[in-house]
Image (cartoon, rainbow, N blue to C red; front, side, top):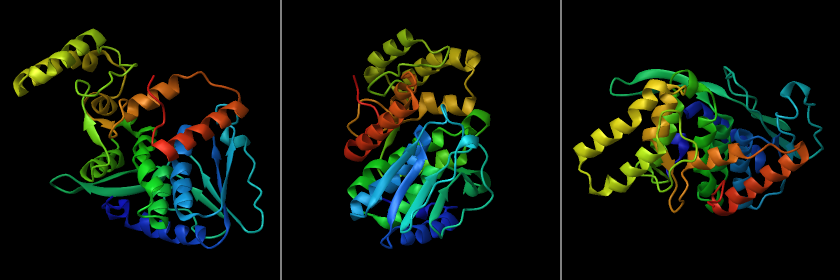
Length: 303
């Protein structure tokens, strides 16, 4: 596992995470605090994995999903003596600087950061997801922990869940994806190569045509694959309402975890298709998702 802290552009966030990790291992009870929303849970589970790997005391404190209780209506947490609250907050806008790393309340929020990319090493600015900050803390706490290793690739889904890919381009999604692929944590596959064809395809992508292409794929040479795939995808490029940056990832770069028939984006899609439940049941459901990620590294089990 290659440390996330070695990624170009994460030096400041890694230093911040090191200070937070020190406070979480100082003998306090850690409270994992956040709404029962997927992007929040994907951050909290990074911290929980590290706490479990270290054998440190903690407790979950999931609050109702923002679907039922908007952020503006949430009360500030009551912090008991000897507790440290780790509050993961998913917001649309990125903060210009990292939160305070000391005290009984540590907030994990989106933070703006730049990274140099491409042959010309041009600087590109995007937002680090709260889950990525949590993962940086987790790798400081338990760099070789089995649970930390198991849940870490899911930070990519948290970055996916932010809106940058719907507007233009998210440099941090690309950087994270490439880092996780290079270290062997996951691989990327196109729609013709994934084991399970996604259940929810963008408008213009024909499941029938894709299935025919998938069956013929092993017998096709490079030129035939390129031509066949272009023919299958062209209608979506013309008609879909999905942003081009997100469509490119959906079609050509789907993250696949070893041994799992459902790629990461398909697992998220199946979870999103489930009908919303009341706030209490939603918290139970998300807590079970956390259990599954910690024990199996899977968000949604295949049917």
